[in-house]
Image (cartoon, rainbow, N blue to C red; front, side, top):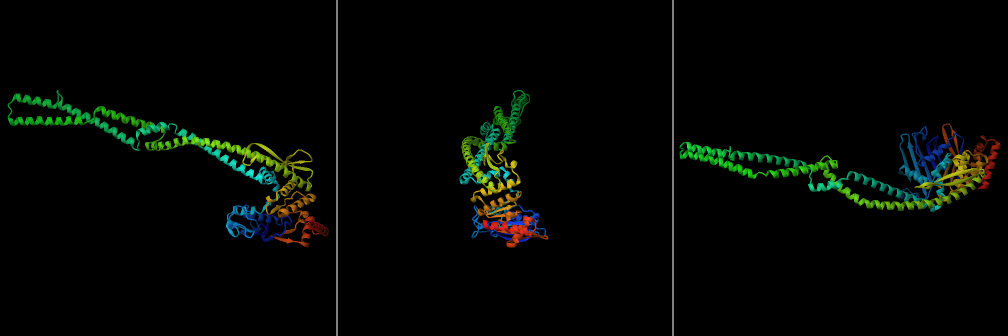
Length: 549
């Protein structure tokens, strides 16, 4: 229950404190007096968005504090829980945009303050009836009247639906990944087999190219050594045979002394030694066929690597090696993911079946809840002079299942036995106001907040209908303490606590009134002036209210 509200520098209010002790509390005042400033203050402390135009023109910041008698707050930290059933919320905001929120004098984020406030307070503005036109709001209203079983089935449906959605998403992601891997690594098995036979290193192409050039040089060297040996030993034109013939001719032409013969023999021996050396070099060189065989082998390996680079669509051997490492991992994943896909498809089917079962059960429970709620609402509407209309709740089946079920909820209204049409098409503003009140009164007490604040919710009503609506709000206040900002004297007279808002120059003042002051205010609401007749009428209204307490 809201025990006390302090507002500072909000709208036209410089500072005021409202101490609440009644169950049906009204706040009245002339148009423009500043009643909306109180509503803005309640919205502010409830966590609604703050803007600089909220702040009083003579101030740089605004503040609000609310004290509640509160039950423990579900899912809330222990240090912020009500102490001896007392919960204190406070909030400030400056023109610079900086703000501070506190619970039990401890700073908290705005969302925590809003959550704590929502557990104790609900605000219905004069435009609240527009929420009746929102399909999601209509579903929530019906569900709130369906009991614990409906709420549990709804929660189970949401959980299973979300799990099914996540399973479907994961299944699609895996299939997409498989498609991408298969496209990227479709030739990977052949590449891997070839790569393993080549024993690749990041610089293998450079090494093989160097080997190939080395073999080329060896071939050239072998040819040069062979041509030298031929020049030395060829029967026709070879240096050694030619020198032997020269020596023999020389010996046959002139007498050569032994000393000179030694010179000739030494020359022949030197040429012989040179020939033997070159011959030995020739034997040390690689065989020409071996050189060609090794060169061909290198050409094949380098050709294979270049082909692999093109096939794998990579720029160099380092990237090719990285590709093969990834490919091995991806191919292994492809093999294992087949079973994962099968498991997910089985799980998806199970979840789909469960979702369908919960959706069918939820629809049945909603139909029952809708029927019971419509019956209660029609009874309450009849009490508010709408016996000529029939409120209905249509459960419209959808062709698909959503997290909220497989149906839409449509609030309908039929006038004087006419066709039932959506309330948006068939109800006036005053009728929407009464439907909203009837729904609130028809709600399960355990689902109502600890406090309800209505901002001119009876707008569009007058005379008897306003009076009857007030009686229903009074009835609601017995279950849920109710604060009502109103212009209706007949409703204001029903209150067990009355505040009046007055404009004094640039200042908005709020004070609790009773006795003669209250009679004057209700007289003003009745006739626009405090005439004798109006005051007498006000006394009658107040007296009737006292008898009905």
